Length: 212
Image (cartoon, rainbow, N blue to C red; front, side, top):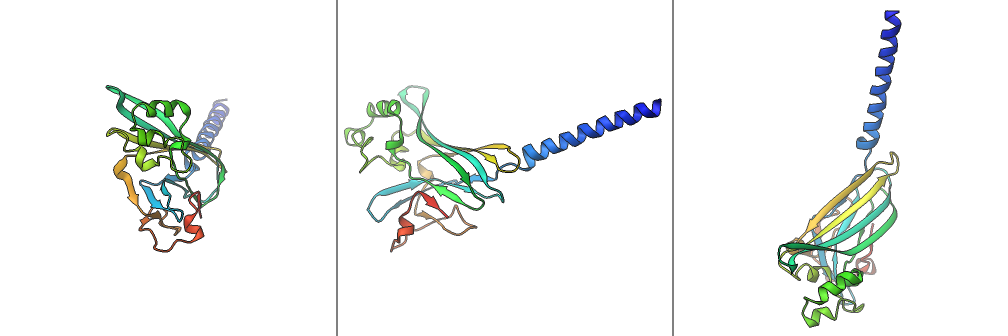
């Protein structure tokens, strides 16, 4: 009788430990390996337009699904003393990002919802305020980060591992001094290196929405 009880208890304990191990591996060992560039690349494209971009990279060996990329700008003390105001300036959804692939986007004022535009218009100089909704000459990210001394950008990426289903959220913060003149490198091992702008641009160089 005692041996049977010990056997049942050992079986239950083994089952619990095995389930816990599987859960831990799925929830922690097989999480998406997504990274965000620590700096922003600023350059001028062939049309003479300014581009200021973050980069998101799937550094893992498996595809990641349901990427939700959101950039929020925090402005401290601009609207009310001692109060930090947050506003969404960029919101994108990507169904899948394959291993080794990165994406980069140009963020500008045309992505800001109307509520944020109304707030900014009250405090920006007239020559900048009229550009908030100007498709041809909007305010770019480097200019937005200079609207007030206590301004920062928070870029968050939420995604799901294609094998385990585990969700991961990665956040990167930027200030104006995190902007570097140049373009992100194209090599697979130096995705976040920002190189000086080439003297001769190709059509691929000018593509600012997706990177290999």
